[in-house]
Length: 133
Image (cartoon, rainbow, N blue to C red; front, side):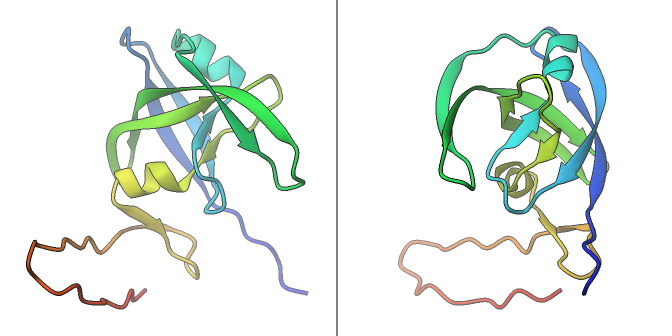
């Protein structure tokens, strides 16, 4: 049986008041949004802005607060939406954040790599560009 390999990356989260903290994120290509653990978002003094209902893998639904933060990774930085976790939730780096930062998880090397960015102009026929790792 193949060994499951997980990828972690350290990032710096900055709240709207300028407070910062370093977080070790599990890179989860199956997660849509990035999740900040309860102690992290309290440390940088984030305040919930809105609630979103999420469906878990087993079909149950949960409600969590969502807002935007500034996130700096070794590979890039920018503002991204995050879920404000409950006690016991793990820090996850989701695909929305990866796409905002122009990054992709290399499936074999398990590293974050720059995405090949595409842009379609009006009037041009869309073309398929294969992704190569």
